[in-house]
Length: 340
Ligand code: NAD
Ligand code: WQD
Image (cartoon, rainbow, N blue to C red; front, side, top):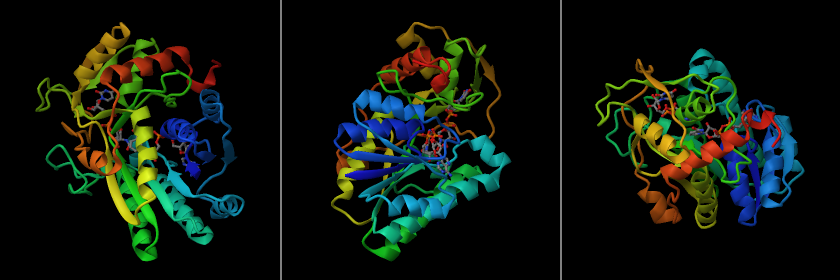
């Protein structure tokens, strides 16, 4: 298939490009590079030996989006583009609503105009209400989001559902990611956060590299076995493969379908620190800090629907996640800013 990948220079998008190319698909990427570097695609080409067309484009500009569709023939869209920093979304809510919603609306409009009927959207476990009993499945309650970023994901899901309902012949897949971590085993592509990382795994790996003095563990008084927060970390290569499985499934169906992409295996912050130390042999100095506002004790997936309908399940272990993160971090201490 000829696949249009928005946000394809970013962390998850670039890993998905690799899996798409290796599965024999062709890829055209659009990104405005607000949180990424086009160097990632040169690395994708190096890994796969295949060319990727890159278009620098801001999806908020509807004429620019239309022009991309007018000059290509796409079978399917994978929509990764969006802003994703929870704290920034609290400080700048309009930026988040404007960016994430308008991008999705412009994309839908161009799809309709040019007869493209299949889209896979990067949603998030953050759309589930915090008061659900774990693990969450696709029928669990959504809404009650604790920040504007989460609401943009919730609202984009509604926009896409409504559009699929109205058109009748569209196929929309909403993939709810849990906590993506890790990197391609080549060490050529990985997560390259700007500034101080918000998320656990990049903070651990930058601490291991000596770029951070120590890790702050946000709370050890949760109602969990070791008192630290529990999440469902999933290797980004497994996640990327989930998109290829979803594309295959989409061939057969119309309407909207939702899937969790997680491992279903709960892991605490302390367990992750220990796993990283074991996989890499590098000690992670840490301190216990106050709870982070908005955090909950535990979030993890029931991924059984993805296995049942997509034939997909995560294959890679916590050890793989830690080893591959460290391989990427140690080969690229400055992310894509440094040469490999
Ligand atoms: P990322 O920031 O690495 O990638 C997102 C890409 O979108 C970036 O390359 C950015 O430059 C681009 N972008 C943003 N706004 C754009 C616009 N207006 N026009 C064109 N390009 C634009 O993030 P990621 O971790 O790869 O996440 C990909 C998607 O998955 C996002 O939609 C994110 O919300 C979602 N998601 C991520 C996580 C996670 O923990 N990483 C979890 C759940 C869902
Ligand atoms: C994981 C655990 C922290 C950093 C976020 C978004 C969510 C989704 C994925 C996009 C928690 C603890 C963290 C640190 C720590 N993104 N932690 N010290 O909060 O589960 O999810 O990313 O959709 O929307 O909210 O991930 O990696 O930030 O935190 O102790 O320096 O690690 O308290 O228990 P989270 P995270």
